[in-house]
Length: 412
Ligand code: SF4
Image 1 (cartoon, rainbow, N blue to C red):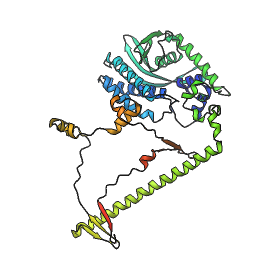
Image 2 (tube, helix red, strand yellow; image 1 turned 60 degrees about the horizontal axis):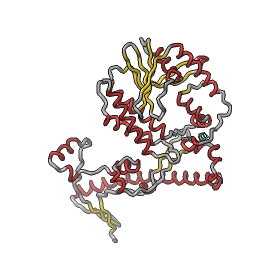
Image 3 (cartoon, rainbow, N blue to C red; image 1 turned 90 degrees about the horizontal axis):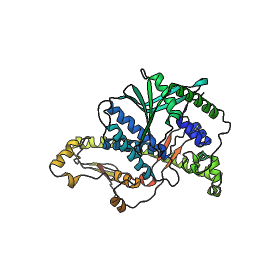
Image 4 (cartoon, rainbow, N blue to C red; image 1 turned 30 degrees about the vertical axis):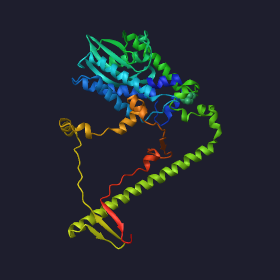
């Protein structure tokens, strides 16, 4: 019997067909909302691992951690139609700051456990995956804290929440000496919080009810689609035949033509990959030959080597390699007033910030926004099913050469 998470159950409640597609597919896709939630929760796990070691977390550190996690999660995002990435990013920043504020009220020594993942057994042999953001001690109580990243309003019926009560059940069995359990929700977008104690009987009732809900999901013969507004944000819509057939524009291109285009793209992609591999081999061979010619030139103390049809000139020049950790270099540059005149702006980061809508608005206005398309090809009928990310065409043809040997034909 599969073990369901509360995320699965929420997905089923939103659209049973979406749940079915996410459970059956190995193509991992998340919505922007999920991206915000996952990156904030990863940031919190990272921050809490420092807090329990006695390092308080500042707002700036929380923001930096969030940004890193956000960038990683964005790789898996399938954004909804008309959704603004910058809007979600800004919400993430608010959540990160608010978390740092909540965390600032404790030195971390009260935390019993954090970023908890567990499995709770339910009646009739079923089980559910639970996750708890933090459990901390307050007097003789253990507080099970969940951080909310969406716009859910303050709830008064926390004591009725199935997820909270089943998580509390897990805590009573898994943590020693927890007689009194308090459920707490903290809303990161508003800074509100609500809490209530939970009784053992209520936990048992929740487990019973959850088992029934899981049974209903497992026995669903159809997993019917729920076509509606949610489809435009659904990360599975490209594989949902109900959604695709509901779009008129889809009829303008027959299925065979679409399949043929995908087939052609796959072939081209494979050929480009083979060419890249061949190029790497040629470059490696060229480096070996180059080393031999330079060794010969060194032994004869000549800077020109003649071949049958070409002459190679050898020019030596100095190349400065700075240390990987540039802290000392930057410190010295700042001390001597050279920093402002020679330091480089991180343009790739700036470009990324402008595209996300989080850069300085004055600089953003100076940039010209163009649109490019990245395609991700997933091979079928392969056991490893690796994804090949294909960079935008412009980048594919940008090769920087750093020749140390100049080649000139004897005839030329
Ligand atoms: S596109 Fe709509 S109908 Fe299809 S799985 Fe997603 S939410 Fe359900």
